[in-house]
View 1 (tube, helix red, strand yellow):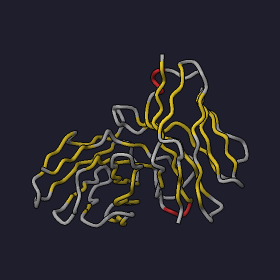
View 2 (cartoon, one colour):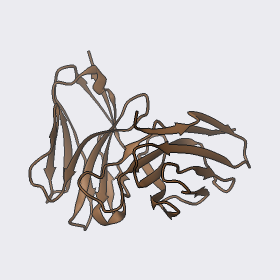
View 3 (cartoon, chains in turn purple, red):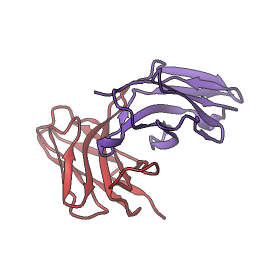
Length: 115
Length: 116
């Protein structure tokens, strides 16, 4: 069975600084996808970034980037130039290609950006 | 304006009653999903459907039922058999069929269900 672990229940960062959120996962599969979702106080789940396991290059989306270490089964999210609007719960999620869309979520990290 | 809508935003139910949560999408997506979120927990999959008139159980299907009579609609019924139904429920959709790099799940705004 696949599992996703986020070891940091809460984190805080000063506005304009950089913060890294950790995520590790366990799977015996080789073909999968990894995601970071953001859930602000409105509780709407918003996709932040996606990584295909077969790609060695780390995904980036503007201020958001990942450090994907396949051998270590690690998938951390780096947020650069943090903004107040980045305050949210962040969930790491795993999907095996053959799972018909079954996303496995971690328990989340609550990020607070302080002015 | 394309997206996923869920209604109602807040729902209260007495013990022993069934209640149905609505989920509608106009993204022309084939696949739809229902997740449950409890405090301090990630999302857990209840049911999913890859195509009309077909659906599969997720990890926590007991006490829930679904139907998929139309492509754009995937209602979830929380039955009286669900022991602890108070939670936040999220619906999602994706292109589905053959999974591809673009097949990302997009979420609705959620329904907060409280059992009194």
